[in-house]
Length: 113
Length: 164
Image (cartoon, rainbow over all chains, first blue to last red; front, side, top):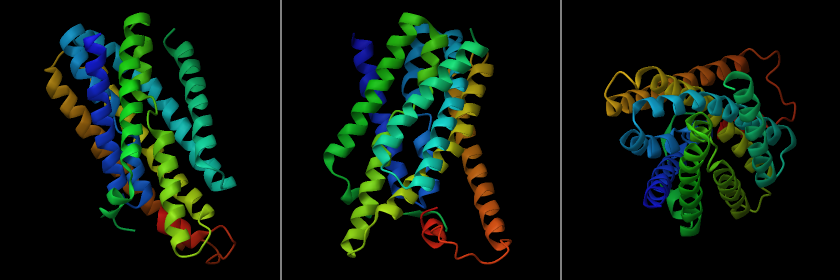
């Protein structure tokens, strides 16, 4: 329980720090790079190395590649939809989470299962 | 457009907007740990690249861009959508760096010092993301210069250039 709480605190702090960096920079396409920063990974992998060991972390990183490919699909989906239809950000980005889940689970099943 | 630091955005951001991002970031980090414990690192690892604060950041950008235009008495809907699109395009570039970050950790973590590997992987993400962003920027400039007629086709070109 303590470890989960620690993950929550460190994760929140690191993700917020990268988001803050993203806010600071212009132009927006450059700031967007920080939206795909390895913030969750940096926040948790150090802790995982200490508790589970390096091989466990390597296995997580292997799957993370698939997560990053899914993130690429999700971010491209948002970029295209917002430019093409000039819609509202919340429904578009919420739908992109479904894109991420679909691509990540599909690729995981094909490549790692 | 050159890379600039814009500190006035920090004053525009409300405390609860920071809190929301902290909450989402913390929840995803905790969830990734719980999922890895329950289903193994092969499943938990996927969530290390979950777009944790993507919706929160996009709505924040939309709100700030709209407010900026409305202060001038204009409707900022189109400009806000273009800014969110440009931010998402940057995130898409960053994900290539993110995949390489994971690749470096996957291949080197068992054989080298974990802290050194994390540092090297972060530098790889940063360098690759910057390089790819520069390439995309140059490519966009090249494409604009070589367009048949310097278009006024109503695609919001000048606004897009400013946000991108």
